[in-house]
Image (cartoon, rainbow, N blue to C red):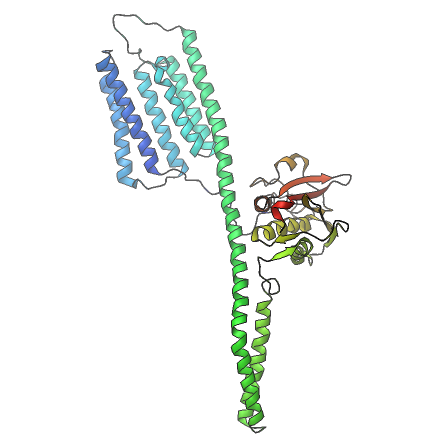
Length: 436
């Protein structure tokens, strides 16, 4: 059984989560903090430091900010490469400022972790890794080359080399941890957000189809009465006009076309589940037969097994999410089955269960624990097809189905059943959550 991506659903795109305004505001915050810090050390504490060089670096950041707003506008959403270049600039500017004020001996060296955190949260993994590498290089350079730490000229301050090495190690460890952990968490969050958007898109499309079915049935109902009136009037005219004339031929044509219109309207009425309300209550057995029907002509046998001793089948409220989720899982099973797909349903006073089993090769054992995650695409497209070696499948299809079914209160389990190792999806609802 494969996780195939639903047709037309978007794959993860190039993320542009930050507005330029955010980068500009963060830099203005840095400019303000650096200005206050330099002025406090020079004027408040009276420690000597290269004021001109420090304010030149701070002024450069302010100038870059003004140019960015003038050139692109605050609402501009930069690309990942553009964002990475701005964060790299901030790192280099901060590194130069620290080099003028004591290097790693400066307690504000901890701020080297701030650009790393921003990049790990907002940038792709490669760009975040490059920013982390740049921060590590800057920290290493500052550990060996820097001007003396601004301090009281009357007091001779010397830091033990082991202490400086300890600061360097702590900053490197912080860079590695933040860039790895934060980027991974942010990456998973972006994947989930993108895949949930695709889920909403699939659900919206299904709702639109259901709405069209309802509209067609309503139109057929409303047009039926005037069409019957036209047919009745035409038959009365046929009884009064002489046979064989042009008028009689026209009347016969009206009657013939009215009958044709009635046949078309009958088809329209059957679009929405044989004329029923698409959200009406339906027994579980009928629901499973309905969602499996579109896949019965694909060369695979779909077999149903229901618990005969459990009483009458539970009644479900038909919903778009329920139909889409079950249909997607059955479609996947028929895609990867060799000959048969087995659908078993059982129920008791507490729960309702549905198992979908195919006689295909089963799930890859190393992936079972991750099935249902978005964009899991390491399985081949078709184990029996000519392109079995090509990567594909395991995309959004099962993630969407799992999400929609869990919204109905279901719990899903993916497993390979012994001894053949065939793939099985087991769906369990608390009876109070789904039955009506």
